[in-house]
Image (cartoon, rainbow, N blue to C red; front, side):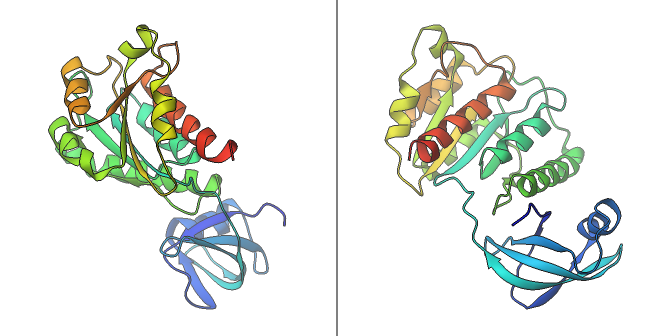
Length: 252
């Protein structure tokens, strides 16, 4: 099958349905598709993909019919949540986009001690909507069956309270790399099984505070260096996701 444009829809329970809003505009004005053209629709509820044919195309709505279910296996065998300390500029956009491509299932904006950036309460909703849109577009581009969810921002104490919800918590800590530690990440990943839930904690540009790291360690988190080099905050989460993908997909 040739490469087809992909769109997420709420659910595919009928033989035909309607696509509206931005996706309809994208189909009609950006892609300039016509009736008879085919697309892939991914159901957000069922996490399944379907080959569909366009019946009518308009800027406001596009009518499609389902032709057949398409077998797609693009999700990581484990569920990875990235708790990302708020970085400067548009780095979080990049982290969400690339992290989605690499298989993350959730992102949690985190207010840590050394994070310079602080979100104004009145701007949080708009920022989350933007990040969610970035995740959706990246999920479509990378053939995902799931759109990662962007959670409301939390502080460090709230993060500590959530640690017990995960099978494994991994803290990327540059001091471990500086001391030459390189084995803990591999050991931690070897403990995991398919279906496990992992929380990856990434510090801001100034790194995590030692007290923050100790608090997580006291809760059972694994504190790891990411190789011998010191990574930027926007690189660390992607390194972690790539390592998890290698462990659970490429080694099999």
